[in-house]
Image 1 (tube, rainbow, N blue to C red):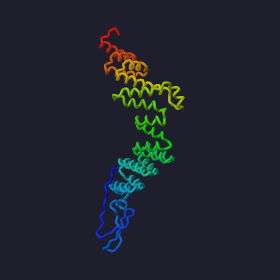
Image 2: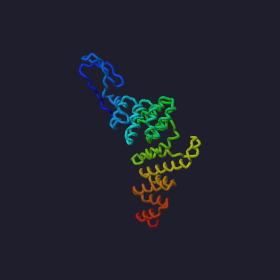
Image 3: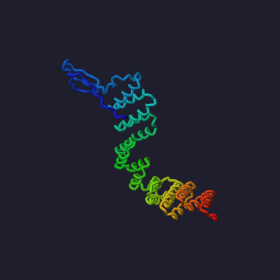
Image 4: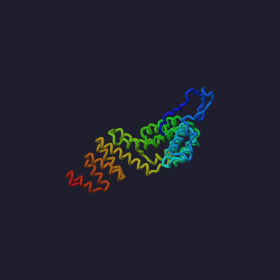
Length: 313
């Protein structure tokens, strides 16, 4: 919603305001020695809106004046008559503003009208939460105030929700800090994600360290220890990605033997091709030829050997 400009109301000379209520300004007219009332321009549409008979502009102005006065029920009524293409924007904006004012019931209603199913479910879930900081944390997250949301979650009885939020946001650096405090079992997976995020940067030793720390040495024991429903093949794929990362960093860092040894541990064809393509791009021709051969791309292998004049190979 755009920030509204202040609206001023002009009254006659010699009039002395003494009360304002529901958009009506009451004043004493010294000339006429009488008390009169006048609608404030900021509340004009409270009293002059013609419901379905009004124009699109009239509906918007009625909505805006009620929105600024936190009369959200009236805003819902105005939304019904807006152009269908505009309704969702207004309903979503109203729902978020209602949340900002902790009106959870109206927020749920606004999101329902906008057909924003994910937010309807989220807000409905809030009705069953009793802890204040958890409620405020969820609201802050919906409103895009992620740092505030994490601060509130960490100060609550459910600090792991701050970690969940950082994971949802793919903010792997912050997630890695939080996992050390609240759920060490997720550390290997977050380290691997962070390593992949940084793979295009030149800090190969640091990235390699992330991948090495991510590797799960005994997947079966890991599953038993954490008592979770991780599938063994998912952990094996995770380890393959970590090995790929170590190999990639090793080649980038000039540790060719280590890079090749790690690449030869891989069984996933796509990951092997990824390393092979890297080797080829940085002129490690012999290593790329060996890896092309490993995945059955013999024509590529032969082309490289011919280029290197290694005809006996």
